[in-house]
Length: 138
Length: 142
Image 1 (tube, rainbow over the protein chains, first blue to last red):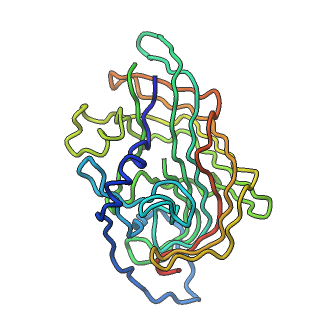
Image 2 (image 1 turned 90 degrees about the horizontal axis):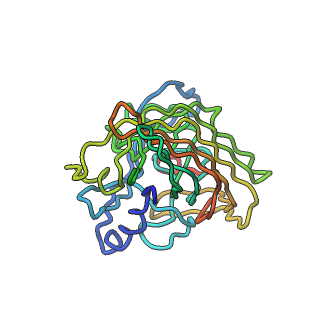
Image 3 (image 1 turned 90 degrees about the vertical axis):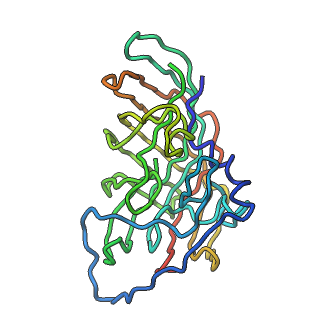
């Protein structure tokens, strides 16, 4: 048995690479050096890159891969949020394990595919202000 | 038990599958080539059963249901490739990046109250398809 997760990122790369990549010019606020970052939970903004999935949804993400880019939708910027300055980590992994039906107690071997990332640092949020925070792509 | 696929949904600002976490949950030592992510009780999560069902607005397999990452521990180490001073003017990002190995342990639960109660407990990382850590700037900071 298999837990399906993130598989579409590879499956959709061809479609998006065919010319469905959209973009928008980044907004450029004036960043005063003396401005202290705000510390609170606010909404970050997505990277401009878009990826048209086969499911009728357009999402702002590059698939996992080297920053030089394997194709237009794979690799490149590992961050999910734009106007960002900080540290990142990403891992595209396969795991083995056990799945259990909580109603019956039945268990079986399961496989799990995961693309997990984090971003931590400064970002310009939807409110136009610089904030500090950490985010996980799960 | 069938298929299960976990994600936190897409934010009102259209950021994909991304949620805020405590800053102390994410640590990097670029000098040592290591990083760690430790989070627990991530309850702003859904089981959509499959990725297509999550991303298809009509959810053909049924509505997504509540789920939890009880714990998630990810470790990066062992730099295999360094890319310093990289810049991509097309995609407006730059930084220093270090490809690594990684291992992960996770326990994920689809809540029993949803009628789809399920728990996955990982045993081993069987394959690293890609992993990297780094520092970067993008957008207005590029």
